[in-house]
Length: 197
Image 1 (tube, rainbow, N blue to C red):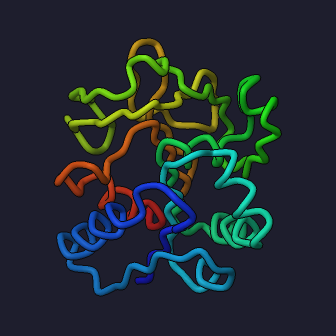
Image 2 (cartoon, rainbow, N blue to C red; image 1 turned 60 degrees about the horizontal axis):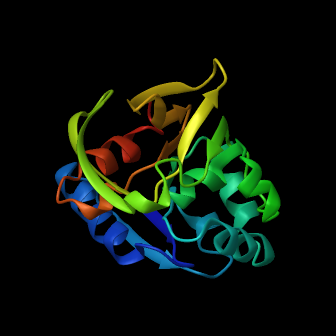
């Protein structure tokens, strides 16, 4: 199994390590590749869009042709995960900040996201979160977005303060938090298995 981490910016190395741990725990033979080039995602079995600055990541993946490869992978039913800014990019609709910055979204998750939902002043916090299919998970939020609306096709996996912070639509998984910043690989394990269910 080959997992691509879109290495434009954000917690790329942390995702690489977390994914390697998840593969090992699941006893899956595989490799994890961080990439900023076209042609790698299309040859992978799963892809992760890490956090960072959503406007910048959007511009780069669309101009470099990586966006089309992510869309193709999703269409083939392969696992696609976005964390923090990655969640914003996976969503279909954004808030006025997303529109104002003219951030192009992938539209793979039938959801509306709000950037910096928990406010900039609370930069970051950690909280135990009950995540469906995973259990109690120590979630790290850093200037996090959140989902404010989903269609009936989207399964809500976790909520916090009236916001949806984890959701899944078929093989697409969106998280407002950073699972790669903990030593707990269960969310990455769940992600690697969603292509099968």
